[in-house]
Length: 360
Image (cartoon, rainbow, N blue to C red):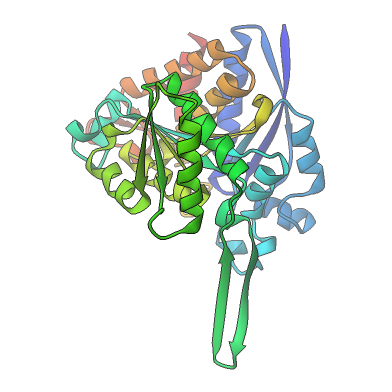
């Protein structure tokens, strides 16, 4: 019997709904292999602001540090939009990544055969899609200082954001990109804006240096604007894409729509030693929060990634992944991926359908 302690951070909006569905499926899948997951829930995001006045309480961060892995929902919502930047719900996810040194954000985009018609692109463009966006997660423009808005005259303001990367930060994320490519199709595309940004000039220089240690991996470079276009024009050309924080944020969201819905995209935030936080890429979806309409698949697949990457339980991950595939193959759909002829069901019902297949 194996036991693992999992910090469960549902957050806000649909994050609460999908995180609890995912945790129940994770628990059920574990029982098949005599694995017990002990979940301990904590506040973060808007829920934490309402309760204790800050998006990431010290108790929450401490719980995560003392857990084997973190399962995260989503944070944010219009209720807190007028708060100062430092107090907004989104600071929870940034604080967790920084506080836990989760520098590697893995965002796979996989097209299930049964969902080809749900994509907004032609089937021949997306059929067989299996790409991985590897995003640097604890540096770049989201964390650089100074960051502020200042008055420069009575009728003029100036906003300042700072993009900073050290060569060591670039080296460790690019090295991981090569390692991931080595167990996939041996292709790594490094995305930057080297023709304009000094950050990107350093990024490309370091990527080329690291590539010398991986002669069997095909390394290519692409400007981020071209990568955005190529991702839509010919996504099958990519295998592993490694890039900085902001570029990865944008490209991975674009990649999610190749699969039919951002509700399908899971992600892992990893540090050294295998510890990680796992979350759906989507946000809190305040327009459907509390209506049982959210797609829980991204959260469920994030739970599978938790097993595969953090806990080294590939057999549990496979049970979850197969259950999701089976439910989709049988035509079950939440509203975001529903097409004529499929079975439209709620978030909780999709969870129940997948849970049944986990138990089979």
